[in-house]
Amino acid sequence: MPRGRLPIMDPKTGYDVECDGSRIQHDLWPLDEIDPKSVKFPCCLVWTPLPVVSWLAPFIGHVGICREAGAVLDFSGSYFVNVEDFAFGAAARYVQLNREKFYCGTKCCFPPNLAGHTCKNGYQHAEYGTALTWDDALQSSVRYFEHKSYNLFTCNSYSFVANCLNRLCYNGSMNWNMIAVAALLMFKGQWVDFMSIVRSFLPFVVVFCLGLVLVGWAFVIGLFLISLLLLVWFLLGTYCVKTLLES
Image (cartoon, rainbow, N blue to C red; front, top):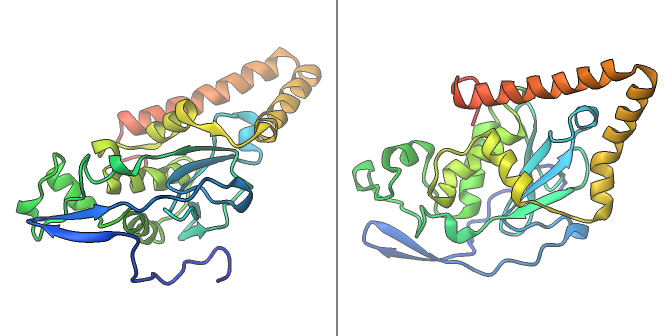
């Protein structure tokens, strides 16, 4: 299968599914080990620095979310979701998610009608679309973002990952957004290796030093103001004008 193209969905699933009243129960099969060399990060969020943008603001990057088999999915352009071809370079940081925190905290609620929706998020979760499996939820987000225009400031890779987590109702929450995804990676993420740290911060250090030498403290102040404005934009768009940013 060519890299970067969506595969035809295999009807065979990695789950044993049993009906129990209005719920559908799943026995989770064990995940493979994380293997950065093969670009396999089962059920992980992954992060890589963005060219130019991360040179000025190293806390900003490009993110993706991985299927159970480890394939990376990332929203990298208008009407396009990459598969197994992580845009902007290899993953530098990752955090593995716990599948047991999917399924509304227990097991996936998949009722025959809205009135039978039993999780605490009820109708809101039904609007997003409940999922039978982890990969099923991700595929629903892929189909949704195939009709979305990419915009670094309003609809980007963080929006796609947040949408996936909301469809999963991960950790029992339907409030995943860009800031929450960024915070999860920042505070829980692990570096792939030492060179990933160098690749992520060396360009910023070089730009900072050159700017300081050639321009002086005015460059440092300008750089700080750019970072502050970006932070304020995403905070306001996430928590004050909630229709501004996609999630």
